[in-house]
Image (cartoon, rainbow, N blue to C red; front, top):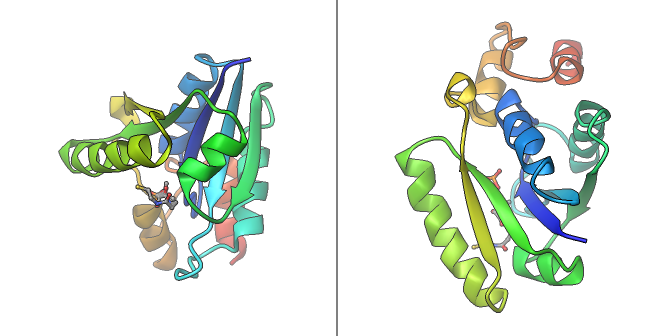
Length: 156
Ligand code: PNS
């Protein structure tokens, strides 16, 4: 069984992430979406809520499993016996950052590969940072996040 790992902060999950999840899920038997917890960062949503939003947003995609993890990505990849990590790339800044991380993860993970998937053009401007900023000023995020996330942002 081929498993691909899609890690991130997902604070919160956006339509940009969903674009990658939908496309990556068709490339593997199982897509493991991992909410990586950084103990030094609090974030907007607590990790458990990020997982719940991802589970709701991915409910229709059969081969997606959402988990939460603290530690090195390479250790998670080894534990879950994944074939590769996948990351979305929106532009040159992402490409530079992700290439550096891919090289580090390859070294830490004993040859672990990272696949870089260019974002679809209609969502390439979307980021969780942008969503948090729009929401903080009570702007409309309906075209940036799944409906379940827009609903939680309105409630806050
Ligand atoms: O959504 P983000 O914030 O861009 O995700 C970054 C993330 C969580 C994937 C990255 O920070 C990460 O892999 N963290 C785990 C710790 C680790 O393995 N660091 C070394 C990677 S080079």
